[in-house]
Image (cartoon, rainbow, N blue to C red; front, side, top):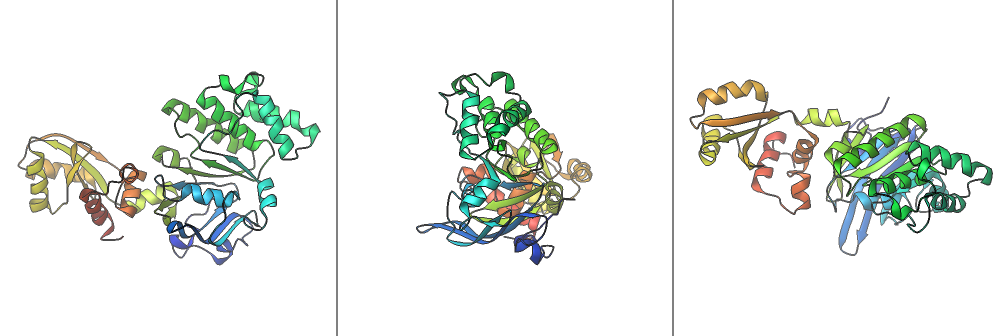
Length: 351
């Protein structure tokens, strides 16, 4: 069973054994991790653990500290303070040993496009010391897993973006790592290709005894995770399963289009005591049991309603609840008053 909330920020369910990395099922243990670049603090004292066999996701906007954390865990950056253990090994002092334990798929491709797929994988096998007798069968296994065995002799330059990403996943698996790190694994890909990549990743979890740690700013991608850590401005603000996080929000999102949106916003405030504002072209507000509230809305709102929609809390609502903005607006630098109002309504003033 996958544990939830196993981090200091997630509350009392975190155990000391998990936080110090001594738990038998703990593969990643991070404690008090800080990373500064001059005056900029990219990671601000975060704590979390990842259990063996778990798919664990870092969800947050660009610049939140996701990639910095993954670089520290993968020995590509050194922490300013704190500890990061991977399979019981210190990512700062035992770098070579950690690297043998992990696979990594970067945001940007690192394939040699002038080589064939097979040549790319053989070069990787040599770098990681895969026994020669094991290379050919393992290469076929991982390439078949991502549906590329029939294209092994093709130059990577002839591959589509989605095929290249699948090849990078196969390469990351070639040396049978304990942990596979996926840094924004489907960024820049179209929705159909992103969906197919996730089909391969989920199939991988069924075939391989592996732990997956991914970073993403796509909400639908985070739904594939066993647990999610929401990170914002270098801090983890919540950790739990996707369903538990959505349940913590509590209120539904109601959106209406009316003959007089400004008047509707004012009336929602004066008659119903609800904070509302324009979002995505509709008057938007949060309310408990939205479907039950809609009949009252039609009966008591004087402004004619043209359309109404009610949605259960999503991960976007969760992110907004804990940070006061959506990921889209956070990446755009927007922190408008509506988002802050929605945040206060959902959390009772929590910051």
